[in-house]
Length: 385
Image 1 (cartoon, one colour):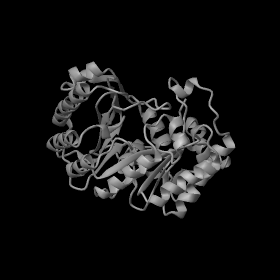
Image 2 (cartoon, helix red, strand yellow):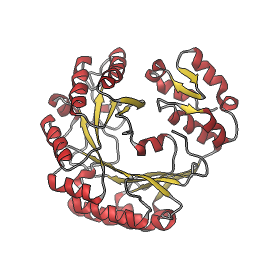
Image 3 (cartoon, one colour):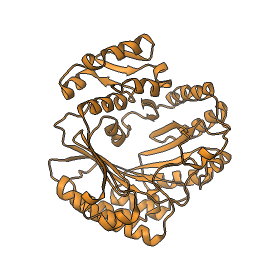
């Protein structure tokens, strides 16, 4: 897969749905419970923002690669509300038939009726937030669903005709043993979703977890969990294409790959972030009343607007690209920045090669298996002074 060029007109669309029945104890995303009237007003505000941004970015020159409804819990919206948003997107952007359109969904919030309407509206990929196949772990995480409800939601999605499903799983949960993680992995893999996102818990500041004394797995156990993930999922026909993501052949998430390759993305909704043409980055307001009031004038929503320097672009190119198991194509770096990767990062690459954390082969630089386990340490070293 090639990296994006400076002249690329590809664009990904992200719509943030910030509503949850209850915020999970580990979550630091911009989300929470809201009343029904606020949700109604929010959908109308989103429609207003889509229309306004469509006038600027909705030309035929912009090829829409993917659409992603994230949250929060997008499945708290009704089928009619999602259909209304999809109609508005299609009216304002050039979305071709077959474009990947993903919607995140939480077990316990799905109904057969809404799933049918999501599918009819154009959603063709569901991402189910399972996190664990153990009810005790789910309760500890503050999830609103049980294992049984996840399985019911999974079956409903299949019955509604969804042929591209992702399941999210979380490892290194407090009290979790290596054998517990192994059971969770195998139970989900046996269901046969097309994609599995398997990532470690990160205790973020400001969350309820950050204020508790947690019995977290030690470093060796967490590393073993990671290694086991690849070993087990390969047996079930999944290949790793990114540090935390595994897919059956041809089922890699187009939207996420675009993010790691720095393809332009347009974020709509409360707190949504955007990256346009490689160097314009901004975020919408995180204040609900400001968003509801100003959505039809997107410029008023902008916060933290920034024009990235060439150095900042290079840093992002490296630490995002190295997340992909295929690594970074050296020729892509040269084409994008007009200089060789060795001129900028040669010494750092050589250093990590000697440490056994990076390898250079077939014109690519990629993390080794050992490097993946300490990837954050490697990424930090590619921040230029």
